[in-house]
Image (cartoon, rainbow, N blue to C red; front, side):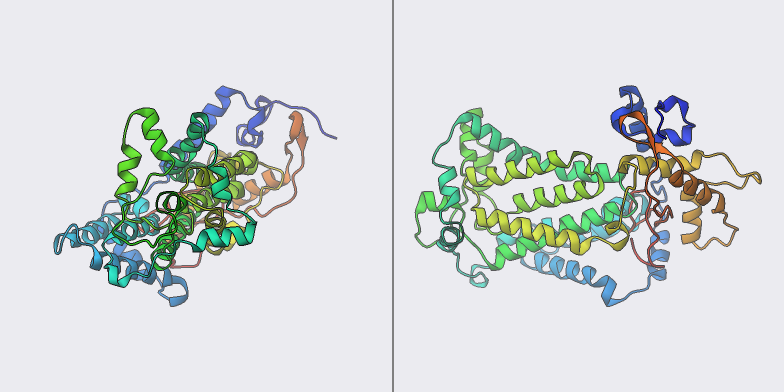
Amino acid sequence: MAMAVSSSTLPPHQQSLIPLSSRTSAGFIRYLLQNIINALKRLNTQTSPSVTIQKLQRHRWSLRKDYPYAIQAAVWVFSLYVMEAPRFPFKLIIPVVYAIITMVPILGQFFFPATPILTWLILFYSSRYIPENWRPAVHVSLLPTLESVLYGANISDILTRFTHPVLDLLAWFPYGVVHFVIPFVVAAIAFVFGPRGSINFWGKAFGYMNMAGVIIQIVFPCAPPWYELIHGLTPANYSMAGSAGGLARIDHLFGGSGYTETFSNSPMVFGAFPSLHAGSATIEALFLTHFFPRFKVFYWIYVAVLYWATMYLTHHYLIDAVAGACLATFCFYYWLPAELREWETGGVGRFDEYSLVNNLRDAPSSPSGSHRSLDDEIRKLEEGDPSPVNLSHAHSHSHSLSQGPSQGQGGTISRPASRNTNVGGTSSGSGGATDGGPSRKGPDGEIS
């Protein structure tokens, strides 16, 4: 029989099982600060490159696992080859500095998981220097024709027939502001609250999605709706400057020229298909929904508004947004590792399950006094420390919590479904994730 309790009646190590909605504001602030502190404690503070060198020596290389590095290397070589500014040999400073940074563990733990994202950015920047005789012809009429055939009308054209300053602001904020902030917010949430491996996963999924999108835009260039409004269906060429489209009204509204200048000098003028604005919003919503489903309605409302904004501001057709969403969905599930694919909450919110693992280090010591932090134990295992390891008490403690009563809806205690409470992961380091939380341990020697 369920009975009502308050968080103050539970032991400290079980108070994290109380859903966020039933906590006081002060309690949530303490909970947030504690998770931030725990995340910072997990950071690798080593500065010796020898640590990274030893980790590379222990890594078991295989084409099946390590082909992403070959893809990144190929993109870097191509980008540096076509790059005209800075010129050779100064442009070689970029990979040299990056290599030095990733070799230092305290820095590499941040930069290595972001390698796919940095690879996408350097490809995007270098695309402006690709020789015109290497580029295919720009498709001007293909997208509006496909849109009319598939959807019965040019949806983007319909959405732009009526404009208003209020609608301009409503479209501008997610498209021109939030879009550039959300990826950092998602990474920060994953770092503080996410399970082990979520930062690495986010870097791969988000980075490779954008990288694939830019490659498609290079080999399949398509004119956006603003081109049709300005030039009609006349042939396009790569000497044409870009346009801010509907964002020019935002410049006029605020008395500036930021968007007009930015889009006029864009390295990817004919990158309408696929829409990486739509793709980014979709993969962000998929990520947050998977790990933090409590607010999923708000995630997808943002996605819907962003889709509309891409068309209202004349930067994309509907088919571009659909293609971006499909690309994001594919990349999300392709890069989602098995241990995170099966990430479940049972009867506990995902915020709370993460806090549950952190609180294992605060659990009462075993009679022998051998209880140690799980993070310390895992780190010793991965570093090959031969000293005895005792995880039995922590495991039994987490098992008792998962099988014991937890706080349900309406302030009552309900028993969650049984679930695996094994905890594992990789230690932070150059080439390693900086995130923490529960997950299964990866294969030995894997660069995570």
